Length: 424
Image (cartoon, helix red, strand yellow):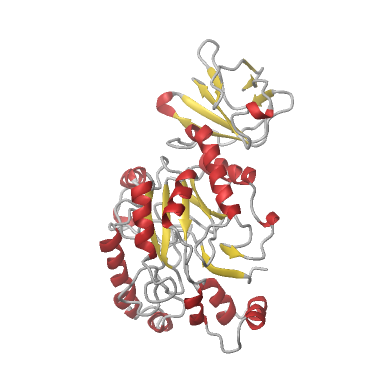
């Protein structure tokens, strides 16, 4: 199943690097840089896009020789077909950067990061150091990076960033460096560093491994993942479900089985909007940022199912974004009485948000964590606005009387949020 993919994929932000070595920063400096970065609590959701030839296909097909991929290539391409022959097939002929920008804006994301080069080495700009293996010389014959940069900055309030893979699985210089256990440094000196200079000077990205606006993550060196860095990614689809002492990111995909577009994917292979909302509230309540991945086609289009999910998320955030954006973790991440209730807070405003994913049939929501004060505590349903009745429970917590609403009167359909003022 996984072999049937087109020439586009979306991939997570693997390598952020700061100009100052992490070891030279004090913890308060790291926090300050994080708060001012595009990935701060103010912007907990991200769209990330990788256009290009699918590097993982080559790895599974030619390096690991996984039978599913070998058979797929044998059954669908000529015997003498080489990986480089995918270049002309990646046309992006329907790629419309303005349309993409509008979809990302509608999703409620606060920053978008385009993969300018992945592990196969194909650059989406006319790199002087990737001759005849870039989007200007091959395939689209256009500067994909520039088009999206202009569209994002002219049409949205999103932060624009670029991901650049720090290695290439099949580049001769990289392989030679690897054979010397990286005692040689031909690849970074001759290829990686010059291309990073090109990206910075041409496109002024706000997110890149070499910008001050971003704190270093944990994917910049052997043995660093989930151990060192300004924030952790640990693994793809990482979602610990509890508070971590370190800032972290959940890199996940709407397609349950692939980072890239799959022509043979069924509707059940995609996460529902209810599942995506659950991912978001769990992640933010535990102090993380959510990276939500889509896989466009080789023609440059975002398929309807991905567009629908992005727009649905934006619709949900229009109502409940107050409980997500610019929030912090609370003393409890989730409720101990009612399942699927997750908390965030805004300490300066004396606000705690309780996001619940199931509307109780009784109309009464029992919350075991908040401690309320009669005459001071107020409870409102976001998108509804009117104060709700509540009573304190015998030991701890409160019972909230939810409004009696028809399905069409609901402020949203896939999860709700209560704003609780003056609770402890």
